[in-house]
Amino acid sequence: QSALTQPASVSGSPGQSITISCTGTSSDVGGYNYVSWYQQHPGKAPRLMIYDVSNRPSGVSNRFSGSKSGNTASLTISGLQAEDEADYYCGSYTSSSTLYVFGSGTKVTVL
Amino acid sequence: EVQLVQSGAEVKKPGESLKISCKGSENSFTGYWIAWVRQMPGKGLEWMGIIYPGDSDTRYSPSFRGQVTISADMSITTTYLQWSSLKASDTAIYYCARHRSGRSTNHQYLFYYMDVWGKGTTVTVSS
Image (cartoon, rainbow over all chains, first blue to last red; front, top):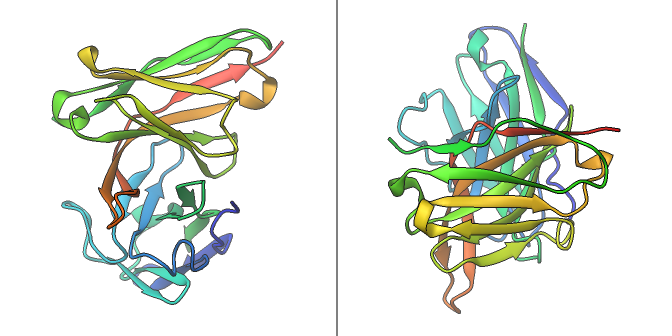
């Protein structure tokens, strides 16, 4: 099972909005509303930012939002801040024998 | 507090065995699946497998089946990841995480997302 496809890097200036895509197949992203997004700062454990496509856990800023269209999910960060600079991974349930799959990861740089 | 506490960093030689642990607080463990995730140096996250400590039901990603063993001891709310013969390519950070799940209409488990993560255990395998 290949990883879900994400752009290697996305950048933006403070205050801008950026969007990270996550492309899978009908066996994962497109077939189920179980897409999640994780933020990982260098040397730290991942942190859940979005679950079930568009839900935010308690404590996550409302500047983070998620959506999905067909086989592609997206994470949008609005009002970009320096603290948002990190790696972001999408994840999804998959009906394949892998059971769960991560995206390839996107490095977000705040210019 | 909901948390998962992982064992400390390990430095091993190729061919040696290893067992690392992940201890959960009662409310982070009971009734939940616990997953293991690998992150090789400078690389992304890889989902290795998952265990339900309540009955030790264990599932593996095909890439990791036969390479590692996941186990649990519910009496001490701890899960384990072990290798019988380490390779240099096992060098990585290993995370445990609480995995939210549900059941499909045909009773198949669906693994949704990971909401509580341990801090990770760094495993270095070098001669």
